[in-house]
Image (tube, rainbow, N blue to C red; front, top):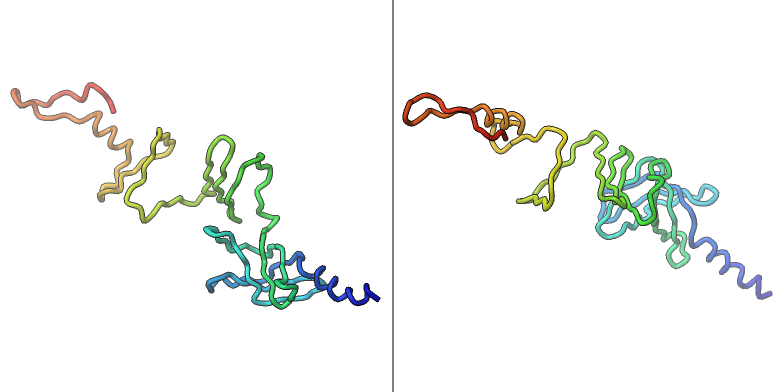
Length: 182
């Protein structure tokens, strides 16, 4: 008799948490919402996706996550821990963390330092009056000056400096090139 009385409560508790497949996402509101597919084809619309403060993402494809029925009410669900196995980074060392997307762009906090992979896309820093680098800078590509319309590269500025001459004050002839190359 007691088990028959508790059966509906036990059923509601079992259905409070489950896996869900996200089939559609709306990213227009203050909080992201989704359509999700649950057990036996059960579909729920308007399910909120909760993100950590300071982090936001819009999963690609049909990710999965955990569905929580708040107060054991299947009509009031939220999604957390949304992920897509297809794009997840693998083989991270213990303690490492990474931010990644479906294009292969990655910010990886490795045991040896921070690695940023642009996946062929530019990396842009905007809306800051100053970028300070408090260490050495090692550049393997060109460095361009875009402060004026010349768009000169460091290589071109180095060549101009190393080969420039000035008129000599006394003789009127040109000086020699600089004795120390840049």
